[in-house]
Length: 293
Image (tube, rainbow, N blue to C red; front, side):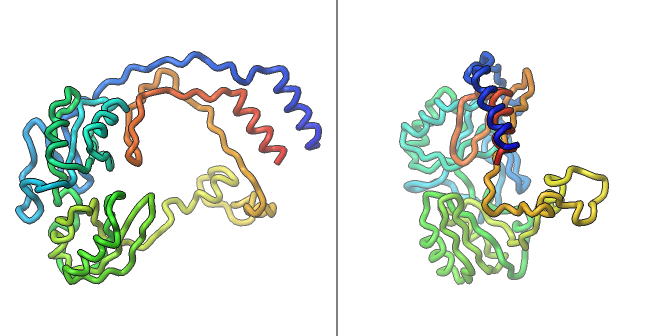
């Protein structure tokens, strides 16, 4: 059976030009109607045309003396060329905040240079108040928090600064994708941690849980209005296929015609708006190869 399928694949490839694609067109991209608004998940929202919001005194700083973290809001949409220019003047792009706002690291001279760019809407300091979840603003007592640091910082050095504040460091994770520190703290003094330059985010620790405990049986069996009983709930596992020694491939050829794609910056990268088309020919080929495996 596998031999027959393989023969069909070879015939299919010989009869089809897999390199022939539909024409690719640049879609128009328009800025969001509230393009001057910056919003944080902790509820802080402000319009940069009016400057920074009123923040608690212990949660704000007036200036960065030498180098530090800033926000640069661009006139959307964001294009890769804009981010390249920001980097050219010596600023390091660390992350993204909606709308159209980069978190950058650098000196005051670099920020002044950025302000001169025609595509820059506003610049400001990445304030300590922006780094906290909402529930930590008025929290009391002692609890376990998780602190995310900037990827360009030494997580061990920041952990040492936290220890010097009198807090108990529980765990340090130093990974290229995400640097975090688990700390047991006096919640009324959380502002002291937020004022540490290299800290990006602080939240209460929560017990890890499955985001979707239905995904196993849905992907193996299909969706039903109620959870089917085993072994029917997990047909693939019940057939003895549990992942060991198995190579899988997934291809998605779906696309929406006429869709306007909005740009997003993920893991410090900004790319110019493009549409990517995956031909149905390649999708079919992947499916056949999957069946052979």
